[in-house]
Length: 440
Image (cartoon, rainbow, N blue to C red):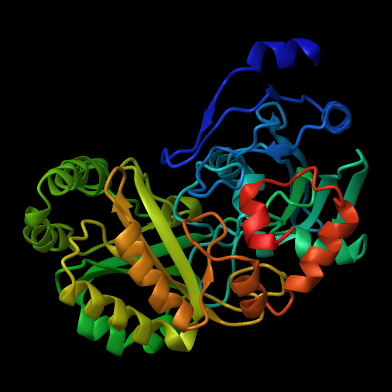
């Protein structure tokens, strides 16, 4: 352990978007639960705060620390597949892309996914990563059990039948309750999804939003600011056969247009903001309608190579269209120039204390800007609209909310903080971000 600390003592850490930088006093990559527990005990003795970190895809300082940074690089792989219970138990540092590929080889799949799969399973679930779904909820809602090392080095196993009060809050724990070392997910036999992508006008998609959500297992759309254009995506289970995008056409859509050309367009827009409306009109018409069928993770996820900053709010689903129209009106009457599309997704209500969909059917409105573009004016204006509708900010995306606000929009907020007080009374896992959003 001492050699590990010495080797990494001065290594800075940055998140994917470059919005957060931290210089921990020391860093460790434990290879076992016992090594992790020992690292926590040492940190506590030395008066160091502790934060686990994943791949840095959060835009907030959730994982930042000047104390001990826990890297999960060696805590990876599948522990067990239980075909009778239809679960998989996986080490916390396993990237979602490796889990998805391993499950596919076993003829299995998660039920739902977000739109990227670079994150570790613990990082993704701890911040409430989600996709879109009429009936299927976030990745965290698919957890059936988890293993957590608490501040005093105790290894706590949690499920609906074991330490149930911890399980009720720890599936989205923000790294505030301990360090997750393993997660058990529900899985199902691998299936096929047919994706239908097509352009649609803003007026049509907002008018038909409820119908589109009701008729499709997974529906989402992107609105291009400064235009009346949207791109929609509907994913539904299919009997097959598999018909993935062609190699050439798939590369043109997913790499050349969605990443390469878009990168150039964003860079031009950042340098010359006056060009953005024209670029938006061209971009919104560049992607053509297409239909393809493949296994779930290849349909749910897409490569995201253009780096950006993001803010996302979950609203009561019935408020989504009104809020989006307010965002459009705000952009139209402002001098803002917005180069990134606005993403809209949905989720059913779930029973996790700090889930953005806790206790209510939800819709998500996510706004983005190209990395390096000043975002405060845009995000502040959007946030004002979202909070007027009782919005809940995504825990891993830029927001300015504090515990006073969040305790008002999460009915079970006090349940979470009570478990935190019990498991980490001395705030070993605390940092400035958690102090703001959870209180001290």
